[in-house]
Length: 283
Image (tube, rainbow, N blue to C red; front, side):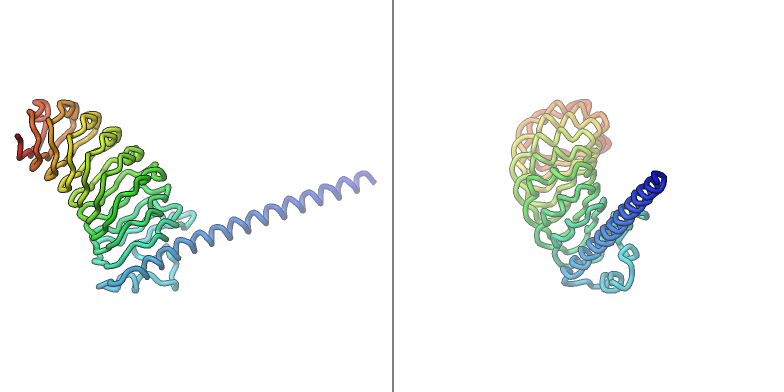
């Protein structure tokens, strides 16, 4: 009798265990399908925000009759089938960027460069935790860089807003993107002081803040950027002396400071090391 009871209890336990596993499997499958649908929906909203597509690229390549991971310009993870990269650069697209692009939860690379996109960048995009590469170069985007841009982008390595119409100050909170290697913000309308906190981005290889309306002095903290190879602060309204701390930049190959109102002398160590050097207006 006891044996029968024991077998009955074991059978019930095994049945319960199987039911739990089946439930978890169904839940995981449903969540994965929902996530893939979320990615597809975000891309379809982006397509709807494009008002002019001269080559009909999106109309030809982005439709629900094929899996989203087969869409041109879209890269997915081979295991999860979630979107990890979006590259629709150099298509001469006109339109705006929808906030739904912030719905991607596995996106690592976003390249919308060399188009004619206008309006502001939705702040939701800067909450995509996984982003490493963001390129909006040569569009017609405007607005200000959100002050909290790096609060949710701990792995960002590349940020380019080159040649747009952004204005306002450069937020000091960019220093929270501690993995940044490329920071490219030239040919905009940024104003105010150059944040000294950028000197904390010790992994920087290239720093380009040229052709804006930046004022004040070159931060001495830039001498901490030991890995820096390229620095351009050209064509701004910078004043004061060239910091002697820049002599610490032993790997610097290009320094552009021309068309500012700088004084003082060039650190001799920089003068000897630079492959190319441009200075311009000094007082």
